[in-house]
Length: 315
Image (tube, rainbow, N blue to C red):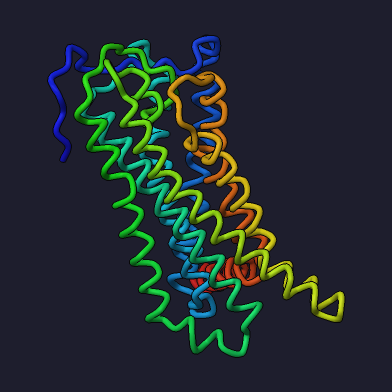
């Protein structure tokens, strides 16, 4: 997919957290549990939305799409992180590293676009409830999802192609997984063009989407505050506060990581922040977004009751 310049470096050594190497087995167990719970939680949401007709609304379709993204988003990086916790040879080929970086950023960009679409959906539902069903049709939902995935995979393409043409002088990657900032920091020669393109791409894909999301929620808050009864305000807030929690946590981390015009920064601190948006946020999404939701809980209970009845009949 990507052309790679002739390099003296054929593979990278992922440094990770050197001071924690002697806790490798313990960290492997903890990370494996988190990964399995993340996959299980997000798969459960996808299945529930698919099989339960009560969840066939735009909001839950968007939530299902987010869970679908999280499954692949974590699977791009966590398996390699798990392997590196147990082996001494923590290497990865340059080609594989560039490809994983593209997949990671493409899926992350899809998520930023999807969070924007979800904010727009909540804005319509709360601020324009009478027109919601006529605007957010099944066709509109499919178009929004298609746009999110298309834009997501296009956003990082230019910067990844440019990175694939760099020559690398350093094989030690001061990070926990393959990513654009550490790749640029290991390149030979002048990388100012790469940094500028990376900054411009991130400003468009992150800052613009974040601004749209916050604009939607600002209008939601204004509309909710106009509701006369406290019960009505609480009900309206409950439908979007969990969404806003995920948005703020996710965007805060990626804004810190990717909106900067220099390749000199605290790589050790970056590794700690990377854990938040690559490991912690994906496992919190099913909890915050869905399992706190009344309809999702009812769907889970309904499926459990149905399964129990089926088993009882066969006994």
